[in-house]
Length: 455
Image 1 (cartoon, rainbow, N blue to C red):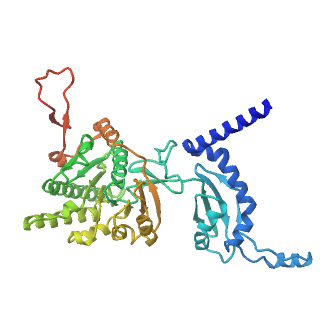
Image 2: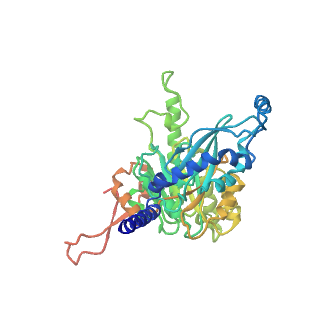
Image 3: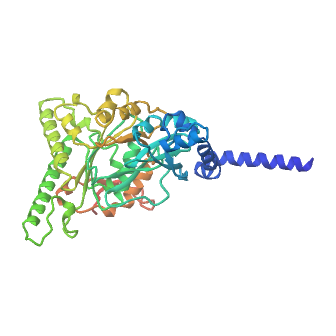
């Protein structure tokens, strides 16, 4: 009797441990329990599931003849598959499609495959003509996103920012997608995405320019790492003038190099210049783009039209000069004013968090894929940080950024303040950092004193 009690107790403890592991360490639970169970289920029911989903083809003439000789009926043939290989978030199989099949047939049946195999999600991706990659996700990877622990692809202006629903990381590549639009309602997680972006750029030799016409409440904590900061429309107008002068100077540098002689390597952008004379990249972050379009009078309208024109010029020509735009807002439609649609069309990358209406989602994602806009409207309010990412290629995915507090992001910018590059044209717009007095200072010392970052 005692042995039975010990066995039952050990079994209950093991079950409780597995439940704790499943909740706290889902990756470990997947490797211990999930992958073996799901793999056996997939292998045992593969042929029947493919047949039920209409993903089989009639047997060949040789198989039909052989079956007739044996007095049997030739069964439909499913696509050839590889063994299920485990991944950090599920498993992957490589399929070879039969004649007459298309990737769209498998994509349309992805939801049926998910239910048949008891998975959280199934993603289909063509790899080469006639071959597919079927990726099965074991659990909701977006429920608890943490910073990546393994080594990811990184480099100049290459940042892993958010985890995708298929277990891969969404990598922001400025040289491939130079300009991006980030939309999201209040409390949608848009600020967290922006913090991850700024912290990733702060660790690289990049000039960061902030335009936050809400008196700098969003970007002021990052002032130690910013080369320029505008907290009013007038100051933003001056920064845009300086950026246009910087862009013109960089184009002149590229042109001078092209006429230097036959032995010089020709280039049409700054990345083809020798590293010794290559200008530092500049990333311009516009926190609330609607504030640049708002006008209360004729003078404001003139300034607004001028700023929008300058932004459009930067969006059209800035990539070759190493100047990139990151535009944020709650809504970005034609009702903002003249030039809004033209500026939005230049922003190739699209990130749409939870929005308050379907029209706002269409502004960001309808020209990428209608399904992406529908997915953005279904983001629940209790899951801030979830967004839909798309680009001009038509591909899109749900993503979620790791949670990053404002204090943590500000600390990174303070620690990397020494990486602020020298850009003389932006020196006049360098933000002022307030330094708190030390505890040992006398009480008569005035409250926080201001000094330029360059000191």
